[in-house]
Image: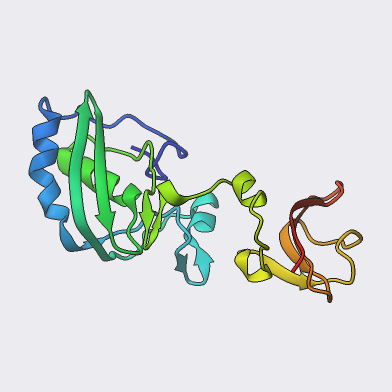
Amino acid sequence: VSDTLDLDGEVTVGGDPPADLKAAVEQILPQFMGDIMQVPPRVSALRRDGKRGYDRARGGEEFEFEARAAHYSELRLLGCQEHRVRLQVTCGPGTYIRALARDLGQLLGCGALLSALVRVRNGPFLVQEAVTLEELMRQPWPLLPWHFPFAHRSVENIETAGGDSGAQVLVEPGGRAALVNFTPGKPPQTILLSQL
């Protein structure tokens, strides 16, 4: 088990898994199908009294979120080896797979945590259609400022602009845009540059 429900947290040994883990998992998976109430992980971006859960948890605060609605439309056992289970999950928004691992472990009586997660689809977006940043940079079409999920700032000149730390989109009056990463004490790093 883990305080973050995955391998990033403080991991402690749970109990022994059932002798026939595959059969035990297949027996309890139907309990999670459809609409259920699920307690989100403490280490999450959810807010409680205006403060993010991960900030509260990292500060050592003891708290739990209230259970909230989650939806699973598919839970399929793909494989089972010793103490490791591999699932394919189709779920609704706001669902935490780490919480699913925790809840499965509790029902099995041995504890469980998430050791790996691959999101293969999000709405209409499929992982097999995804591109790397390097591939994106080689595209011949211009990238518009609103393609970037970062803070936007108007500047007179991209090359001489300064900024707070982190990635920002800088837009010149003439329409040229750049995604620039600012690191204190280092020169700005232009990640993408686009002429509109």
